[in-house]
Length: 266
Image (cartoon, rainbow, N blue to C red; front, side, top):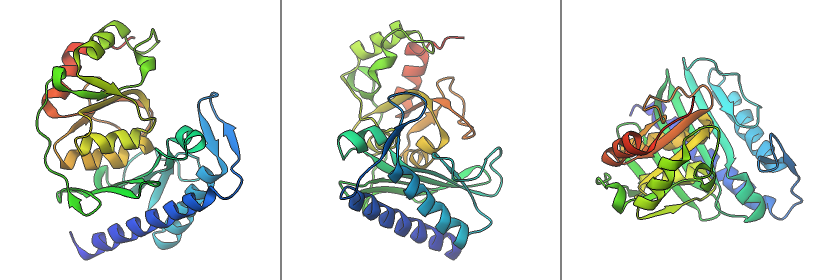
């Protein structure tokens, strides 16, 4: 890694830790909660303040870089040329509001569409997952080992219960069979944390039918450094330009789930 990229990595980590401190302090203030597209799609004044904190600093220090943020204070990203920061200031806002834990800051830095740095910061546990392209992934200061293959019957899979019920996006019967066949399922309410848990071997796969670029851009860099495969459910590369289906898993498990349990509608 050249000096300039090393400096950007240190800068991003410092920014994330400062943002995490601001979030923890926010619990001593009044938090305003609003809904966006539905009653379960929440946003708070803290989401917005933290995104503005990041964007103000990035635009000041790296004026030629662009930022895609969940709360809409960044740039409109229609192509991935140049340097793009993908930011979710609080991934897992419902957990932030109801539990005051189990949420994360998610950040990915890309150059011409190639992921260079990925960061997931579990704010309340002070757990930091991070990776630089080609240099391995880390949990705090401990290097994460390469993932070993797992079959479905030995796998712990991250999946939202709503995909097991009838829904407009996927045939639910094969998903029910997946749930029956695997060792167990979990749902943490934060795509970033589920990606971190796949990367660190706490779960073996994570799948969702509707995620945005800021949900996954940081995590897929970390997951890739330990050998996980991240694609759409059509088994295509992620575009990082809009909402997409998503699956990340150990290589053999990824293939097994795609081939045997995923039947998209339409």
